[in-house]
Amino acid sequence: MVVRKRVLLIDDDPRVRASLKMVLEPLYDILQASDAHEGLDVFRKDEPDLILLDVILPGTDGLAVLQTLRMESKTTPVIMLTGTKSVKTAVDAMKLGAADYLSKPFDVDELRIVIDRVLNASELEREVKQLRAQVVQRYAFHNLIGKSQGMQEIYSKIEQVADSRTTVLITGESGTGKELVARALHYNSSRRERPFIALNCAALPETLIESELFGHEKGAFTDATARRVGQFELANTGTLFLDEIGDLSPVTQAKLLRVIQEREFTRIGGIQPIKVDVRIVAATNKNLDDLVRKGQFREDLYYRINVIALFLPPLRERGEDIPLLAKHFLEKRLEEERRPRIEFGKDALELLTRYSWPGNVRELENFVEQAFIWSQHAAQITPEHLPTLVKSDSRSTSLRDDTLAGRMSLEKAVMEFEREIILDALKRTNYVQTHAANLLGISRRMLKYRMDTLGIGRPDSSTIEESDSPVQE
Image 1 (cartoon, rainbow, N blue to C red):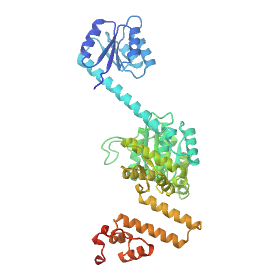
Image 2: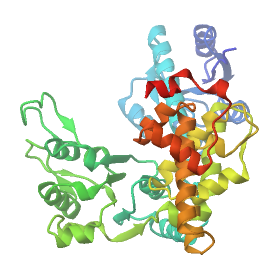
Image 3: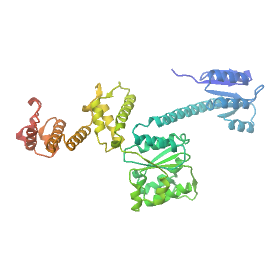
Image 4: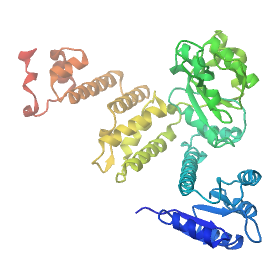
């Protein structure tokens, strides 16, 4: 069922109201008022989607009504109507927030077109605000996951520096969530309704990075067939996130330094300086101190971007956060797919906690995605739903710890580890020993010898494929 828009007509001339109602009623629900007082009452009671407001009304004029409407609602669009063609009245109305202006007598087609355009623009603005509110909510402080001391310190610093124009440098291993922190800085600042532009400096070749940052004029180089607006211009009044800033060349570093210092730049091929108000948030997984010492990163630029430093600890150093993050990613996928609720079993969470996480939070989210897929018909996520890498890494960690703690001899640990690898290879190849041996890089005869030595039994003979016979060695 399509919900019809409601249009309020505020005009003291009953003939005008009747005429407008006849034209618009096939498309909209029409509300009417003959003066300012009645019009405001109807507006407050029925909350119309659009108001057609006459400039000349008995008692209080239309411009005064428009001021009151704007104080009570900044979103309801108002189209002003008048019998005169006063340019000054039109300008005054637009300054007070009118969406458009029409003169009597009305052209019916023009009237319909203007109303349709204003309603569509109002609807689009409402959707943009809703989406923006959702984004702000997504990157609110309480949505940053982690109770470890290291992450609590990060949250505290974000809260302190978010609403400022101070440049921030975020460091940490790949996958620790540097862009998430950059977005949290932006969406918890007064710039939250302005652009957030992210640029991965390592993903662009040197020949394109300058054009990407600063833009270019038509004809600036062979392929410049039109003017291009750069990321600095797009981010004006907002935030520019420069990821992997340590990968910038010395030439681009020098130009970036000038923009940060002067707050202006010139497009490639241009001559006119362009002023910008951009907050810079930079990130890198490299050690910039080392790069500065080696002469690979400008010292003056380093000090410019390293005003506030935020270090994101690797996931392996914040084990208490792993179950929280895993449950968060799982809840997100369940909500997206609208699947029945499922939880991680205790053993699965223990394996995740003991894994070394070389890929950090990004790797964890990927593994949860895999577990989510493999557990479609299960009551809970168990170790069998987790990637083999998690289980083998966790097992090797356990064997190492037991050996170093004196609970197991080195010889026993090596045998257990070898047993785990062979079993995994056999399971991956459906117990076809020839294929398992190829996977392990050994002969089938050696595999059979190791299986006998380690006490790895063969499954029921009916499940062994004929291709596994010794004749085929």
